[in-house]
Length: 265
Image (cartoon, rainbow, N blue to C red; front, top):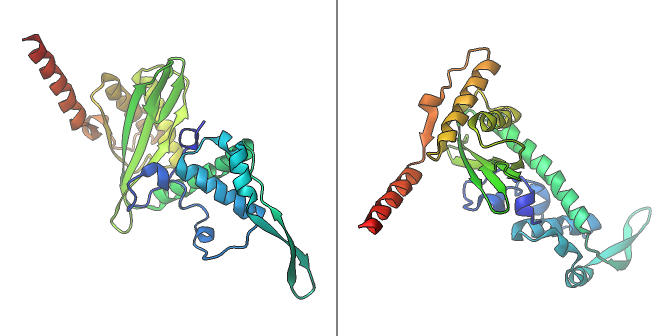
């Protein structure tokens, strides 16, 4: 499995066009900005993880003999600690971590990145809009802009869009998870509500953009109900005024119908 599908990667620098590539760039920024760093096993492991993430490399490649041979060319100093200073007395070849170690380290980065994004969204004064999509892949896999499901489960995908304190447009993927349930709006609306509560942005929600599928309407209607219930009726968020149907999708459907008519002539 590749890191891009396995991980939830968060955060976005406004200068970046590739959302996936920039999710983890806020992690360990100080270490990455160092002109030179002491070569240690930890430094090598971190560099390997950065490589796997940026290149979307499958985890099992960590155990590729050619890759392991390449990493072994890196020499890690062995120091003889003295009272006043350390002296390098020899070096050992670096070793590549196993696929399990790479995946475990990636999970750690996911948790850090998610908490960083959550705190940034909470601290920001801007309203936050969402874009979501639901689709079904092959082999009975379903995806809903935020959610990935198996055996007729629904993949749901959700991204957040907001203006930061520098008045720059920002965006980030909030979640992409395996979800149990059906394709009905009530189920998807409940999932969506759980996600925005997890990030603490239920009071900052502005508009939600989706395609023209009927279940997206019931999804946001259910979200509206849950937001009102959780706020004891004080929230003014209504799906009727805050649901934006994607114009590109509407035009695409219209063009497809038009082409069908032309073929029938």
